[in-house]
Amino acid sequence: MSEPLGKLNKRDLIKTALRHYIGVSTYNYDTGTASGLVWEMFPALRKIYKKDDDLVQSLNNHFKFYNCNPWLSPLITGATLAMEEKNGIQSLEAVQNLKVGLMGPLSGIGDTIIWVMIPTILGAIAGSMGQKGDPTGLFLFLFLWLLMSFTRPYLYIIGYKSGTNLISNLGDSLKSFTDAISILGITVIGSIISTTVKVNVGWQFVRSGVKVNLQDILNKLCPSLLPAIVVLILYLLLKNKKAKMGWLIVGIIIISMAGAAVGLFKA
Image (cartoon, rainbow, N blue to C red):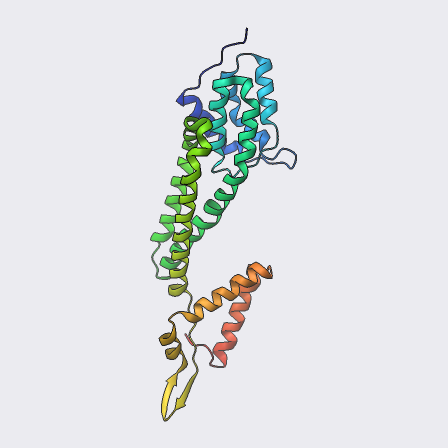
């Protein structure tokens, strides 16, 4: 007769979620973050499996390769706890399939949103406000990042409650959220370029006895055209030529100084 499975409560989930902060800090090329994941989930698994042999089977299953964006990983591991709490070692194959099936898509979404889009948007806002001597953007950046860090463990509870329904529950929501963040990011970056990147042409010429400023003509044709072109060139150099950011900054400084010296650019 099989041993009855233990039941997890909210305190067990929070304890596991707090261990998650340290559990995701280890990585190796053999099992990814699996060793940290096992340490992270061990108290909860110990409570689920009363029989040592069952616990060992579960731990060995979680020792298989695993690598997911640390911010979204609790959604998966929370769901696996719910599955093992319900079906024990009978669910180990399904647990592994869930981890393998979700760690890639969630990593792609998490890396894009957490590591790229949100820091870019908040950093751009902070930089723009900082140019005007206003530190509010910096504090807003820190506040939102800390808020996200502290609320991250609650994804464990969401994943646990979703269980095997995690894929269907997240499918449409994640796509809509990603689309919304993408549109917001493009809008903010576009506005930041037009307000913070300054490229003013200093050349003037006389036509029919009238002195004409080339910058005024460009502004009438398309405001902020030159800043957009400069950013596009830098983007292409970064993407296609794998240019180093430091060298691009040095290049911009040299071109700006040389252009100002011959009158091509003005402040």
